[in-house]
Image (tube, rainbow, N blue to C red; front, side, top):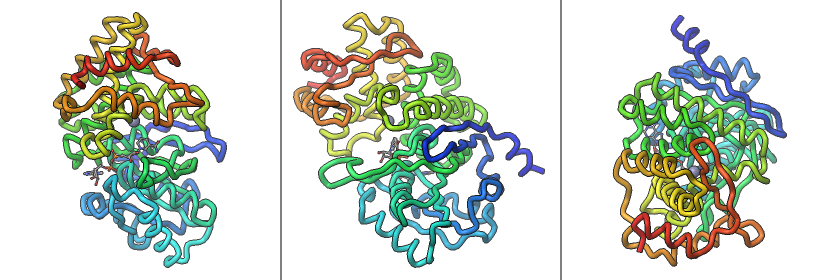
Length: 369
Ligand SMILES: NC(=O)c1ccc[n+]([C@@H]2O[C@H](COP(=O)([O-])OP(=O)(O)OC[C@H]3O[C@@H](n4cnc5c(N)ncnc54)[C@H](O)[C@@H]3O)[C@@H](O)[C@H]2O)c1
Ligand SMILES: [Zn+2]
């Protein structure tokens, strides 16, 4: 009965994709429905769960019992950003080949964004593509990386340089798995939720503010009511712009400076969301200075970011280096940097003429030298 209720309680969000629409099933307890949903979606019987030792130690027993012996032993690969490499993908290929997996195999990625991206890339390329199901276990993966079909790995010379578009067949998002997530990881994901609020949903932004304590206490209802709308926003945007030809770029709010901060610190200092938090402060500053971002909106973004907790220091970084890093980013299209600015909470505009001087001013405003 409990199982039935929890399955029924999940919110279903459809994502349109050229390879076929797929559902995101969001709800506290949604994981309990995984086996039934895979069966109902014809996603089996051959399944291979790929996870990391850390995630499997915490949630493996539950997943094993939910899939009730219908799956072989999971493949465990390390999940740090440093492990997001073609070598680790090779280990997933090895396991698929050893398991004699054919085109009918369903690869289930259980973990954070690193597992989702690298396992997704393995699924995109093994036998020229096999079916993929995401079961994201970090807040960031639940609201962002598991949705939209971007998969890939890092190259020693740059992040996410090797990749593909490979949509999953299903995404199962259970806020209950976040109960084991370290606070810093949780906070990092929350900055992406705030980003969705800023770009598309003022009510979501307010809800994060109003339910902050409940969110940090991992209250299922509170989590669900910020995770589901975030998934819906990402789903809507990627449904309308699968290959990032335009609209999808608004997801990059805060990411111009965010990615640059990650790059100049060699991906060691910040969790991605933390760098985006600084990026949102910088975007608010650029927008406010131009009179594009309403002063109240800029203030609300600043307050929210600062209230959520400490961010790693930036005072030793040089604005010149950060600006140079923005020029090398993938958001530079044919030499033009696309910069997303908020006009007010829930609405954005794209700027293609942000000068170095403006960037430096904004960076100094957030404490960079
Ligand atoms: N494909 C996309 O569209 C997209 C979008 C955004 C980010 N990303 C990628 O996502 C990656 C970051 O993902 P992330 O922030 O999830 O990091 P991550 O996958 O490295 O996970 C962070 C840490 O949390 C641990 N963890 C995961 N689930 C846990 C749980 N339930 N309880 C306790 N610990 C848990 C992991 O073991 C890891 O140590 C980056 O590589 C980034 O490039 C991809
Ligand atoms: Zn991001």
